Image 1 (spheres, one colour):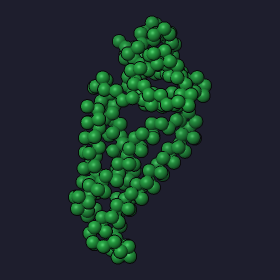
Image 2 (spheres, one colour):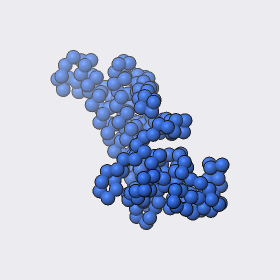
Image 3 (spheres, helix red, strand yellow):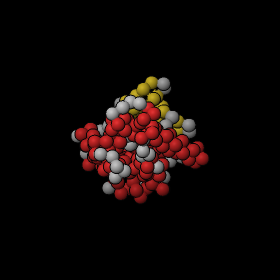
Image 4 (tube, one colour):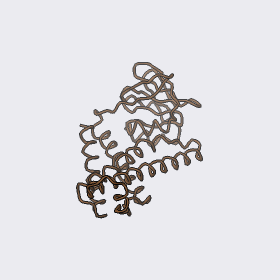
Length: 241
């Protein structure tokens, strides 16, 4: 179900991008090919931006700038190469001098603002689809893979009881009793795990299916009691009640 919906979304994204691109003078099959070139940038944006940590704001901003620049360079190269390929087919020759002489500019398609807007729309749409599937179909889970003690670990979100932030690392507490150490900031775990997980404290992110509210400032998860900071008390109560 999740895979099918995701594939359908990205296929629709290609068609939408193609309709936009076709206004620049490309025939529809050519526009489909050109529209496909926006997917790598959109997928990169969808998966890379949630991983940016703003624990150090200046470092986070720099990382965002680097990602944006890398995506723009990638997209420009893909668009330019595809443009050459399309006009090679149109002219029926592989003579670079002839192609280069007759090669029109992609125009607005290669404009950084246009690329940024289209890639952002596709990436945001993909993220919203993932969130919708998580909320409407919680039984459909996407495994989470991360490194712990230099070993790759894969867990379903339902197998994670809570995530604990400890200085420079986090501890992922699994339902089988394992405590897995990882260096991804808790804010990124919150984004990665989605709405099924609730922030109760700057140091704790809990799986709502395991949580029992003990008092306004305390919750229990299997074999553990955790504090709830005042900032999160109201939101937690609304979710659990």
